[in-house]
Image (cartoon, rainbow, N blue to C red; front, side):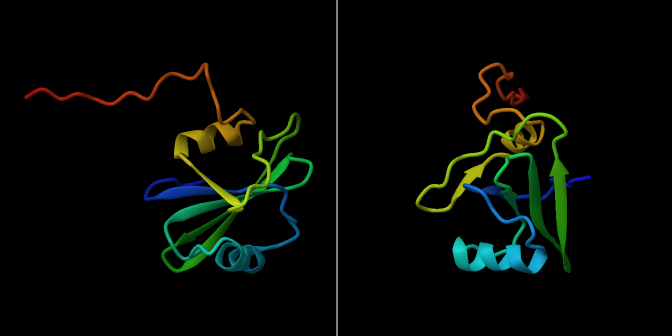
Amino acid sequence: MLNETGIDRVYLACGPTDLRKSIDGLAVLVKEGFQLDPFTSRLFVFCNRQCDKLKILQWEHNGFWLHYRRLEKGKFQWPAKNSSGTVAISRRELRWLLDGLSLDQRQAHPKVTANIIL
């Protein structure tokens, strides 16, 4: 199960990625391709060309996690390649994406924050 506690940001690698890459190959892509540090409390998400499989690279304490998700039906609503190579999303948007939903959910409930009155 993906542990999102303590995660600062989530980055999607826009466009397709060769998912034959494992931890080392994806970490090199994060560092050299996106100029980001893979050893931070961030999630780096990669999708294949068919948009039905993805991998998530996560650093935790003293090692990497590599999460893998495959949709049995449908496709991930994946952003096209852009100039920076990545797009930052919220953890909430990541949950939508993992369920095969669009990042632009118009039917989702608005984010609720508690107003504490003392």
